[in-house]
Length: 212
Image (cartoon, rainbow, N blue to C red):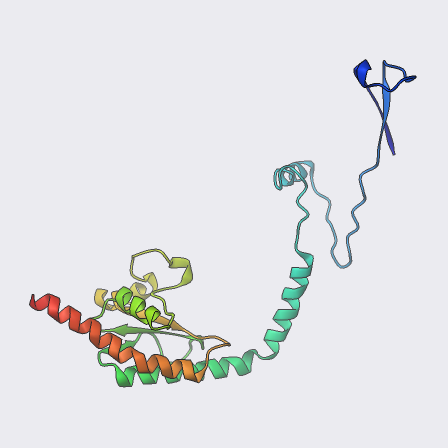
C-alpha cells in the first residue's frame, strides 16, 4: 500500500480531520503473472514509452493468448492432413481445367502444368472481358477472381501475367479459380456446366456491339 499526502479544500474534509492535509491510501499496482512458457524481456525506457502510446496510453499487453494457442493446435491438425488434402484438391483442379478446356472454345491455362500450387488455376477466355464473366458467374453462384486478394480493387491487369509475357488481351480476359478444403466434385461439375452458356452469351454481346 502507498500513502499519499494531498491537499484538499476544507469543505470536502470530514469533521474532526485536519483540513490542511488528508492521507489517501492507494493500493499497489497488481503484479503481472505471466504463464509459462511466455517470458517478458526487459525493455528500454524508450521502448516502454513507445509501447504506452497504444491502447489510449495504457500498456498494450492485449495479446490473444487463447487465440495463439488455438492457432497452434489448428496448424498441427492441418499439417497432419496436408499431403492428402493437397492431392484431393489438385485432382479437383485438374477436373475443373479439363472440363473448361473441353467445353469452352478459346480457353487456355496460364502457367505450367506441373510445379504449381494444388488449389488454383488461371484461365484465359478469348473474346470475353474478365470482369463481365466474373459478374455473370457470381450471379450463377460461382465465386472467382481476376487476381489475388491483395490486388483487389484495382483495374490494372495482373502484374504476374504481364511478367509471364502474355499478350495484353490475355491479361485482361483471365480468371482465377480457387479451390479449398470445402470444395466438392459437385461444385466443380456445376461450374463446368454453367460456364459455356455464360461465355457464349457474353461473346454474343461482343459480336453485336462490333456489328452495330
